[in-house]
Amino acid sequence: MAAATGSWCLCELLRFFYSLFFPGLIICGALCVCLVLVLWGLRLLLQRKKRSLSTRKNGKNEMVIAFFHPYCNAGGGGERVLWCALRALQKKYPGAVYIVYTGDVNVTGQQILEGAFRRFNIRLSHPVQFVFLKKRYLVEDSHYPHFTLLGQSLGSIFLGWEALMQCVPDVYIDSMGYAFTLPLFKYIGGCRVGSYVHYPTISTDMLSVVKNQNAGFNNATFITRNRFLSKVKLIYYYLFAFIYGLVGSCSDVVMVNSSWTLNHILSLWKIGHCTNIVYPPCDVQTFLDIPLHEKKMTLGHLLVSIGQFRPEKNQPLQIRAFAKLLDKKAADSPPLKLILIGGCRNKDDELRVNQLRRLSKDLGIQEDVEFKINIPFDELKNYLSEATIGLHTMWNEHFGIGVVECMAAGTIILAHNSGGPKLDIVVPHEGDITGFLAESEDSYAETMAYILSLSAEKRLQIRKNARASVSRFSDQEFEVTFLSSVEKLFK
Image (cartoon, rainbow, N blue to C red):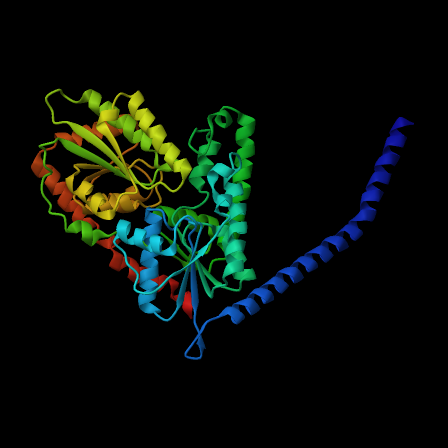
């Protein structure tokens, strides 16, 4: 009797859900149609707004070219790409209007341009208009202690919407890796869209880290110790990678900065027909002007690190390896000093610098470590001219402009054995060694000791090899490959 009653209840329940299926289907269809109509209406409204605000010159509408770069006043390699890309486009399309969407509301446009000249020795020949965005906090990693990738990506959509509401361009280029803004500008703004990818938001390497339960700056220890949480995070990563691939595939033109980035973008976005490697511009010629000679040893050896103070740059590894090097140093050997040079974008970066200072103090080497924050280009060049070793410790660095600058300046580079430095930069030139690679604290300390133990003649030969290998990363090469890649956006 109980079994019959249970069977009857199950049948009634199935009949009830079946009765809701078609009405639910109709409602979902109606909502989808309404959504399409709303989005189409917004697109028409934005196009009308664009035409009404368009500036006319000689009876013709000017083309509006916009770059989405919320941190354009930072001093990293990504910002050098932005300013060199603008300079290249202004040479080829001098009649266009150039826009930069930025969240640097605490400075003026003129101050941003002066900062670009001071840090990168780049001055633009035509005006640039800055659209200041007030919601940049939506893409700050500190705003999302959990589900950071998803939070920042969704936040970029709202930030992109704010940008689109202020200015609708003809050509939109995301130069900072906010792929979730691409469908917004393409389908709602009606723009031709391109992207320059420095580093994929998610990569197969990140999936491997979670799958293998390895701790890292983006994989907390409490997750690695729990198999269930690791499985949940892995599913989250796979779902995010799928969505990331969908939004990235909206791009009409894709430029990547290295072979490592290319491999990941091809596997995620799957649009190889419009994807090209465009090596980032390095001011090679300026550093090549530095006389190539064995570094002065009157004050000992200088070790220099170049890179923004972000967690993935892993400056703590440099400090710990340097501490081990000092422990092994003979008492009568020349003194050593480590100088960390980089840009601070916000309070989080400033906090990281303070933590690095504290680490140096805890290791008892605070007198041998210095920090140089947001220094002018001439001062950076001066430090590189005096340095014996250039340090780089980021795992899977997408490219490594700082690595190229060190090699061009005549500094012997010691980079992480992964990513762009391994695949594209610190590679043999005509069969000769151009630098060194390492991974752990011990291997960094040992390799630094080995470099310092080399004869002056041997170090000089490595510097010459490195210099001869970096011409392919010059500003001139970047302009040629960048303009060739984006040509499709202007047809």
